[in-house]
Amino acid sequence: MPLLNVTLRSNLSGKTLITPIVSTANVAQLSVDLLISSLGLVRIAALDSKYFIPLVGCRENGEPGITTPFELYGKEGLDVVVLQQRSPTLKARKQEFINDLFDFVRESGIASVLILTGVDLTNRLDEQMLTPTYQLQPIVSSLSSTPLHRLNDFPIPKYTSPVLQKPSAINDETQIPFIPGGGITRRMLSSLPKTWSIPLAALLRFALDGDNRADAYSLASIVVQVIGIDLGSVEWKQPESWSGLFGTPHDQSLYG
Image (cartoon, rainbow, N blue to C red; front, top):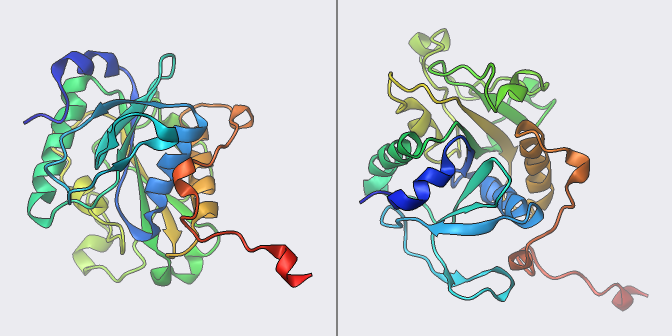
């Protein structure tokens, strides 16, 4: 079964697709929540959820219907669409999901893909403490003259694995480095077909589980600039679903 019906696919041609990976601290999903809420994106499709642990919930802002594990968001006049994955991929269907996602990207005419993922902060090396955000650009695609070309201009370092690699992999740029806590990110990037020509890159954020709103705002701010939106024009709006997510605010009157 395809991820999306053929009728809607024609509307995605030439757009940049942003997709989060379920990973450390859910920082990728939180960033996408912020992008959806702050950019005024609307759900344009509920995609096939057979790849994920079943999940259902209420819609944001009291909208009718239900929330599903895998949804696509966008809006008229914006050349960006955003996937939101709210449930982990089933172990037995990881590769099937990756293959079908690649097929969806190619068949829908998507112009570029930006993957967001978290990385376990406890594995960070000393030299990786200067910035929490890194990028990966697979060799199979070049970002020059593409919607993601700004990644080449921003001072975002290339990600290298903080975990010791096999000697054969250290100097092999075609191999994707190990990403601790990165979910299926490495598997997805390593599964890119040799014939793949669509520009694709990943933004990786070192994080720890906890109140990760600051991580989400930071990563979302970088994404906005990468896709060419003026950061100063964005009015950041925390989604209602975050209410109580990280605990309730303390009543300061209790302490005088």
